Amino acid sequence: MLSESEPGLILHPGELDALRRRSEASHARFYQALVGDLEGRLGEEPPGDLWSLEEPDYSNLLEVCFSLVVNCGIAYHVGGDDRWRGLAERWLRRWVEVGGASSEQGMGSYLVAFHVMALAYGVDLFSGVLPEDFVGRVVAVLTEETGMMVEGMETGESEWSRRYLYHDCWVPVFGIGIGCLALLPYEPRAEAWRVVSGEGKVYPFTGAGTVCIED
Image (tube, rainbow, N blue to C red):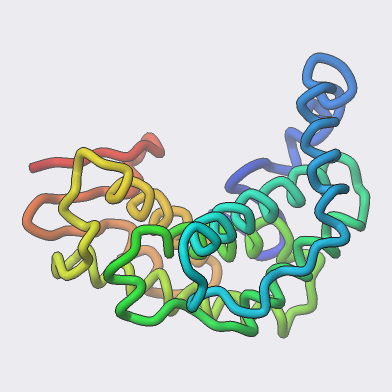
């Protein structure tokens, strides 16, 4: 069971010592590149809006924020530098301020899954060190978006929900799964949402933690 105070999706406290050793030895160049990218983003301001942006800014910013939150979480827990908590919180606060995607956007664009994952990993990696009221706001937006995407896949209304052979489908399937897992400590419906069914059966996570599709 995931905890409200400890991460569990990307990394777990029990493996941090080993990760720290690797960050200074076998994986030093990768870790240094990750930190270097984050340092370059310290002066950037997250966009004041998101959902009205045109392509390619729309998809680029969704993917950037998702990556930024994950990388900040890794760097914060491995290196202990509070700058990365602050950077992630700044982006998360802006994205909570602009609110979640509309129903039309959630049904029409698989890219909304990156927003779901950014919020989900933010909750998982930082809930123990962010203000409780703010975590509650992130959870509220995450719950709304995850539920909307689950509904779109269940009913087949989402444009991406039947493109089984393309990333248009597996990106949101994975995003829904991550959203559900992050919500388990907070949202009673999250467990039921883990299995999304329709004309075919799409299981975001099996017991082995993999994605599979059955016709």
